[in-house]
Length: 363
Image (cartoon, rainbow, N blue to C red; front, side, top):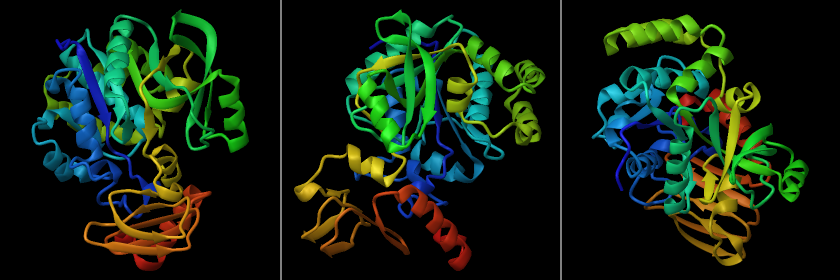
């Protein structure tokens, strides 16, 4: 497949992944681990997926400075100029704004796809087609295009995009509304209505519109964006970003695009998708084994066990009897055994307690 040189990608890889603790840890979050035993980390899988669609030299990774070594170890072919190290964590919108300016400096005709580093794509061929179509469609347009998936279950851990009446083409709709992580009964209503799509967190935009979008949404950015475009060297840009980035708002791309902008459309996509965000979400999307257990790259003996998700380290064997509806996850020096229902809030609580009581090295 011929790759369009104006197509660029930004991979967001700065997340902490605390909801998948203890497998995801502060010093090695989920995007940097081979979660499913495929031989590749989630970051490597995402990079390879995007490199199949567009030139490798057009891929940028946004992450934190503390993950420098991990990124270089896992993406050795990626030039350091294509790794954007956030001085402080300000969520995803400022990271995308900075990446957009960086790409604009190189290619004023660019169209950009923004992808999280921690997703499962079940149909790579359909993903390739949908992203390629989206990039072609967005070229020169004054809107942001997000990619949506028809819900297969009432998942409360996902965001829901309501499709409006106004369509640009058969599978692209004006965004009517957005609801982040609704209660399960509302998620069921959204799914039953047929009007809502899951939010994948994948965004496509023409680089010039992306700049105008951030000028409108992040009010203190206009002069800073202009300044960055005028600078001649990466060293100048890095120094400027280090000085000003901490003043940027803590703002997610989801909120910026789906709640704070009128010029946003959603494509109803056909590729299978899942967010690697919570243990419960992973359980729901994975193929079930005997008695509806999900065992991820682990050696276990299960007896009278049902509806569990289990992930153990290599070289460890689990013998489990009589559990139903639990997470059993071990990594290094931490073992978690926790009810699967409402696990996100429980794990957040346990992470904080463990950090306070035993030290941050266990988090």
